Length: 386
Image (cartoon, rainbow, N blue to C red; front, side, top):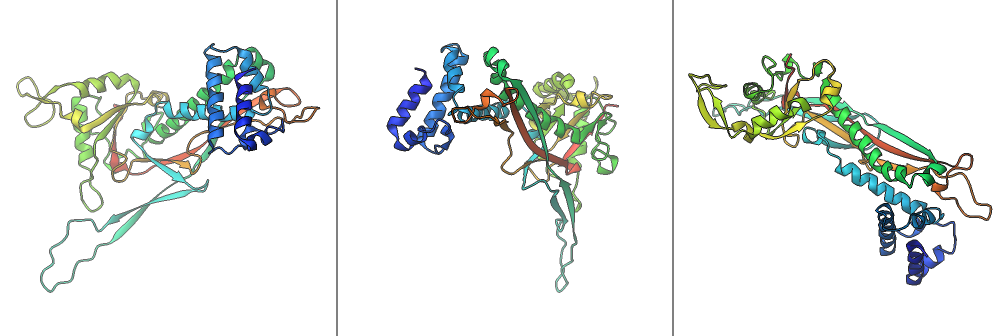
């Protein structure tokens, strides 16, 4: 008798309501409330059995027997869905370090409003004089979320013959696809084949590093000078917090060497010193940059310019450069399995792992909903290294 059958007998003995549920072979264990200890225990036991079979600690027929029983497809589906979510959360991404995360209610275009004005230094008011008036203006940023997804079909024979290798890797593969989709989308907002987005990084926005230098101590010195010189519409300095340095993999070593250096040679009047005019100082750049964000999508998208680098202000302070939004209640990818269109002659539902009526086909589907937009150009600078 397998662990699953032993589990069922235990559950029957522990709770009369569960005993009534299992009287119907076509009833899913999912009908036990998910917030009860009984369901949680059943899920934990099922996950433990799956792990032991994969590790070779239990025979494969234990799992094949359990997964061919119509009582359990939703329980195993729950395990797969949790595997997808776990892998999705563990897969590393770069965009959350430079963009704000948002949530939207539906698929319609959403607006993000920002107001400017009335923040200039207060004017002196002579005795008996009227207080001067100040005008205000608003800026609107808009975007909408879209649906992304994929199906993974295979046949029942494959399911049986490959020792569940396909099933085992499906959640991880789909989780990786969801993360990669987010990352490419976010990267394509601020760069293109020719380099940094020319509408966002433009002379009129004062966010192009003067001279478009290569990544170096001198180049970063110029970039910080440009970023820290930004002012709002009232002439106030823009607070950036600690900075994120975004580079392609080809510049990762250069960036990390600069940040990990203990000292740098600087000129007395600023910039990098020459042999006759040098000051040995502590590396101030490492204290100004929170982290190096290595984005592997940059050289894939920037097909004609692979040396661009960027500085982004802390997205949690002030107005962010980018916002990536997700549909409320669907912030993470969701995994589905196709419900079979068959029924056993003797009665009872068919498990999803038995496939459909026509071909014994099995299909998994992942759905992910997200979108985003560029927002504040004063919160970033870029060098095209042209």
